[in-house]
Amino acid sequence: MKKITLNKTNLADLAVLSIGKRVRYIREHLQKECGNYFSGKSVANRIQLFSQSTLTTIERGKTKDIPSMVLYAIAKDFGADLYMFFDDFYKNSSHESVVLIPPLYNKDDIDEVNTASNERNKNQIAIETNPLLENEYTIKTTVSKVASNEDEQITFIFKSRVKYSEQHLFYLLSHIINQINTIDVTIEPELAESNNQLDSIKLAQDYIQYGKTSLHAFPWHASKDKLILDNKAFEKAAKYTKSLSENLNQKLEESEEN
Image: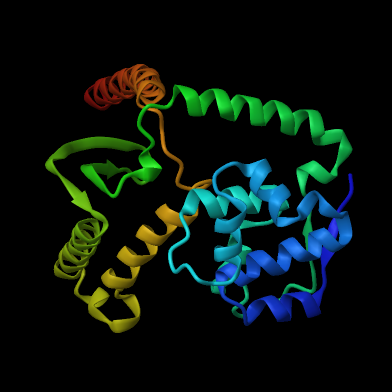
């Protein structure tokens, strides 16, 4: 498997660039090593989510908001970690080098890439509504009780009756985090010390940012697939809960006998 290395000098160059210019820097490095497989035209034709002119606009830093699905697709095509496009990757970084493994450049993977591309095209045809193109969403809030061994029991599920924008979602998340902080401190006053406090504003902003830029960690679930998985999970949970109940009854009986 062929690998392309970005050395410490390359990483230092990337650290001072904007997101779009990091895309250009990495692409041009790959083009230098791999040839025109990584020309702007080739990358745009391969990914098929944007035109060559749009890629040029991104690379020149002339667009402020790059859709997360576009950035994710570029990272995948480059064989790079998505986080390489963001400042946090370079802050306090101890990386001496980073290895890129672009699938197309590795001949053993070409068939796999073509198969994945064909499958993606089929999926795109089948998708009638793409959540990544929406700006407002109905919000479902779930509350669970968590036991000392990390077992969970869902105790509350509520779905909003209207669609929320990302700003509304930010208000909701920061409010929830703040309320939990308040209740925690009420129960355990020592948590009021500043070093024990969670920053509700920052946490809410972080989670919304992760949801937009880290699709591999925060993926969308297809509604039908999720329903199937939820049903299977419920069946397993019901069996496990039955065993817990039987275990409890057995312990109560032993306690009475003693």
